[in-house]
Image (tube, rainbow, N blue to C red; front, side):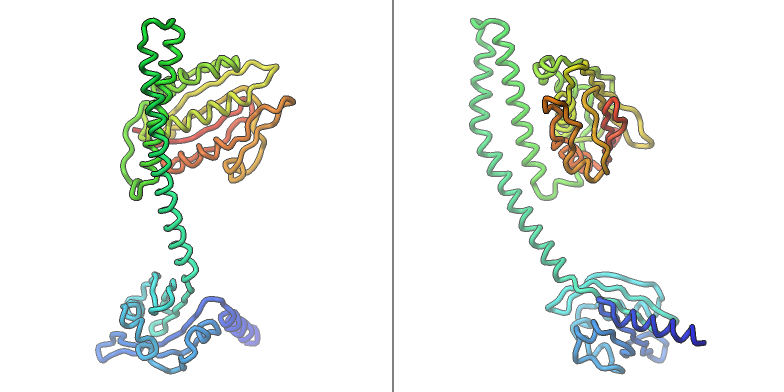
Length: 349
């Protein structure tokens, strides 16, 4: 008996010290047995501070007229009849709060309330910040288009100039191709920043074609690094083609930056089915390995082991890769250290 009494006293002490407002109320039922009101049986310290005028034995409908008006009280009465716990958000007119109502026995309701005003303010601040960022992205994209259009137009004219040597025409054609790709990236930034963009089904994309074009664009950097890139045929996926290209470009550029002076750089790209509805991509290279570190740290800012000449990159691109993969509902991780391998999954087409 003594142990039980001590345990009960401890439980009440814990309840009293909880930062959330806790109210115990007993059902007031009509002739048919339906709960029509509640009487306050207990208020912990947080609840008393929130409602200084609340008295034990008082009817909840009289104490909390605002909660009766917005339907919150009616939902809690429903818990007394059904026995099914509920949770949600409510407001007393000045303060927002999260609540959970649970029936104990047949006639007692436990109502736990947490002030959500700070969270709601933070959410509103975040919404304003996102709106500002979207507006900034729109203005920036607009300002970038004008000089880019000029570059693209002049490069196309020069690429078509028959009097130029073939090598120079190829150079201007490459400039045109990359300028067009930058225009696509700008469009992608606008689409990404536009509210309501998420939830739209992604198109079916051939990743082999995307990476092949990317390898052609990066050919000068690949040759400068003395690298050999092998690309295996890959199954189609559902993804934003521009973001998929960004993802692969970051991984390829990271691999090129990690080249070691005393070792030939080999980069391989392939993909395999990964369960139902997913494709797993693998990008492996023989450059400097990744440092062993937790995933959260790895995809916040990755550092490869540095070579004596300081090559290896900071790995900021991998954090960008993680954002793109997350946006598509996939996952990304670092696999074998040698060859250094990055795995990621995307939805199968």
